[in-house]
Length: 289
Image (cartoon, rainbow, N blue to C red; front, top):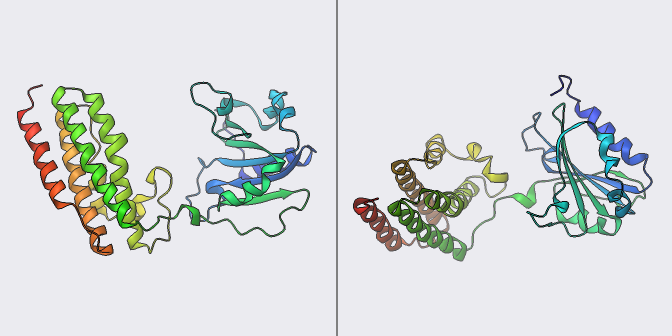
């Protein structure tokens, strides 16, 4: 990696100059953490850039046009990939990590999509508008990502899903299928725990904050005890440690759900909790694998 990292001003000048010199690029937008006043500012922030263009196909026909942004360590173009189906419709993205450490996630969108683009994400800033299409744009805000108050049905479904999934973890452990157990612990049960913790954090912040991608801001909103309890729900590859993590997760889920229940006056499924917890202990006690 090169020693001289480009400054924020260097990067923004390059991004805007490239657009200014190309008549096909009519609008430049920026999204993500760099327009979020509540986000941590550091060297790892991406530049999430959108170019609205008149002729997207002409850019795709000349793939080397992006070399203007600098020498790359690696690039990904998701819309060209076979293993992961494209998800952007008629848009095209270049995810670029440069040798000096900067990263640009650049998306090209057809000019016909600009109204939709300007409205689909509250964390949107218009940096360049050659045709003055957007003279009045709301200041960027992370309000679209704020934790939302749960309806009673969401709370009930979250509880049901969590306790149901824990039985799969136990089954995997009883069979000695550690990958199966870990997957259900982390891919299925954990999202329910994180959802419940989000609601708990929302209560304390009047539902006016975002937990961030992958709940990365949780440490700001949880007590030290809760934070350490959450970290304790991660297991090593040892069977006994997965059992430990499962019970740690169950305890934290229960404690958090009861706090959410009390605030909203919901009903917590104590009997499901009791029966499933007993089942988990029974399976662990008689596991012969």
